[in-house]
Length: 102
Image (tube, rainbow, N blue to C red; front, side, top):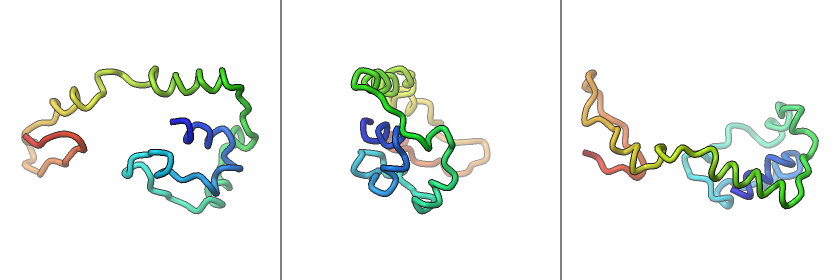
């Protein structure tokens, strides 16, 4: 999580060198929808200026993203049990990463 957070603290500097795969981002979340320059043209003005954090502040943000944003009930072992065996339409179910089909 360090690399993606640092990227968002200075987007204009990192947009050309940021690599989601190297940052450990899951493959299904790596799709780039636009070229870096096109992304910069639509960048929120709040992110145009680098956000400076000292090490302690950065650690607080990192801890928040890693821990406070995740509801423990949203982990695979809980969510996989909620996948139905079938749906009323009879349509095939999607496969979910990490869940064994019933």
